[in-house]
Image 1: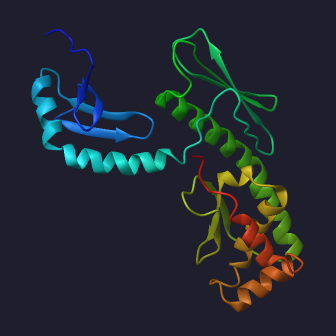
Image 2: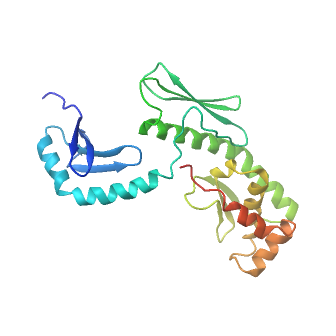
Image 3: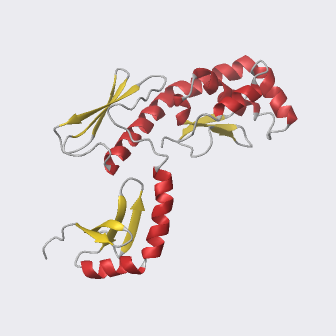
Amino acid sequence: MSKQLPVVVHVESIGEVLFRSDQRCKRLSIRLKPLEGVQVLFPPGYSIQSAIEFVHQKKEWVIQTRRKMEERESGFTIFDEHTPFRSRSFCLKIEKSERSDVRLFLYNGVLKVLYPAHLPVTNGPIQEAIRYGIEEALRREAKRFLPFRLQVLARQFQFCYRAVFIKNLKSRWGSCSNVNNINLNLHLMRLPDHLIDYVLIHELCHTIEKNHGAAFWKLVDRCTSGKARELDGEMKQYRTRIY
């Protein structure tokens, strides 16, 4: 049996849809991912015409789901050669290259991304590779810096905690468990130093005060020279995810 090549078909009210066979597929499925559009996957040997009819049957669902996806896409940063990005220890540099894949290098304070010259940098998989590279570089940086800085602040303000974990948290900069394990978001490395310290102090205060009551904010105020609310307001300028 000859291999089925991907086919792009214009579907009314939806636009271009990519149809492709995948040996891992057990059944027909529709996939929508940010920056990649609408794709239909089906087992080898499946009729493309039947796949197109399936999309027509699911048209309303596709339109609604794509609308939600487009709302997410509107908040995405599209990284290119001119996008400024810097953490505490590295900056981002994106370059075209005569190659067939995306390569990432982190050396001497630069995260270099080389992508195929025959593809636009806005290509979905290229953007995903850039984000992956940034997050892995941030993870390394966070593991080197955050546990040590947390220890310094804990000693300075006389807090005790059990363990610290670096994670890629979706909606929080940090958290403190009931047994005083502290989780810190690797994206903290994108913040100014004084805000990194604020988040660490915030979580250290939770080792004593488990909620956000008056006693908690009084404690945070004592550790931040009365700037707790000011720093908390400043944090709202930043997001926990790279979009």
